[in-house]
Length: 94
View 1 (cartoon, rainbow, N blue to C red):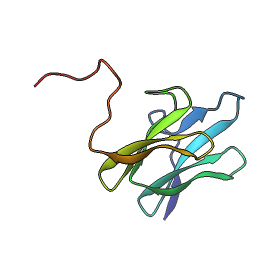
View 2: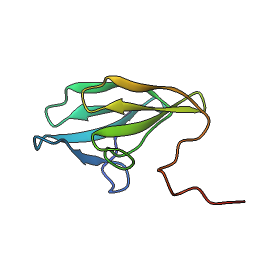
View 3: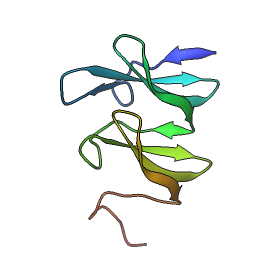
């Protein structure tokens, strides 16, 4: 089953040139399409975060319980090979 998530926590990302991007779900895998319905990031990830949340123009993606980063063009910036990725300074002791 395919779905487009439109709630605020996941759905709408805005690219630097003003194009809107949407996180989509297909068979429990996530990807990103643009406002014209063109697939930017294939729906193959277990999770896709909003862009710019940790790094400008990047989204944290999860694949098989490992995390990395992808850019707004779909290029893998950091292979999903880390168990945890946090924004610098947000780690809590304990």
